[in-house]
Amino acid sequence: MKDIAVEQRGAPVAFSGRKKRWTTKDILVSGMIGIVFAFVQLGLTYAFMAAAVSAGPVVARLLNGFFFLSGFMALAIVRKPGIGLLSQTITGLVMTPLTPFGILMLFGCLINGVLTELMFVPTRYRKYSLAVFVIGMGVISIVYTLLEYGMSGYGGLAVGVQVGIMAVSAISGAFCGWLCKRLVDALMRTGLLSGYAAEWQSGTPR
Image (cartoon, rainbow, N blue to C red):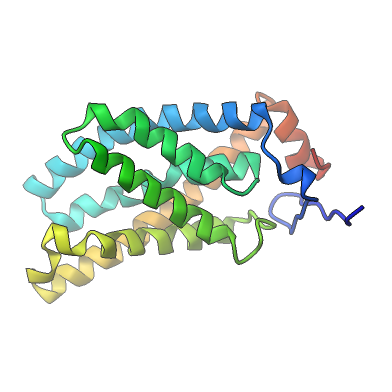
């Protein structure tokens, strides 16, 4: 049997192949997170559009990081490859008929999910420290802004405004990474997710 290293609050963790398989509980938890954040992101989508029109793109990008919470939170709790993408996909499916962007919203959430998973690939899904969340979400926020650069027309703005957009995107992502880690830690302490909380506290693999 393969050796199993475990983690306690951000230390390295690695499970055998069997431990990385999704369970029904994993899917339900991921789905619940995806649905909750679908409605959070729905409000944020309209807030983003309103801020972009009334205050400009720099202010609007303050909301950037919040769009990645679904995937990061699901991964922080379940800690299995693909769970972040699953949660973001569910978020996108719920949001698609509720926004004027239609199927593009699902596509955007899929990109968010893939980017989220990529942040944990370098550590092979072994590490869930505060630094991983802050740096990971900060990087994703910058990358996603760059992906939207063309369609948003940012290239035609003043250099100072463009620098502001990128800086605020990074700050927003880093802040939301910090927020996500704190929310997960607080949720685990409540005991609502007993199976996952046991692993979070003692490092015992599921």
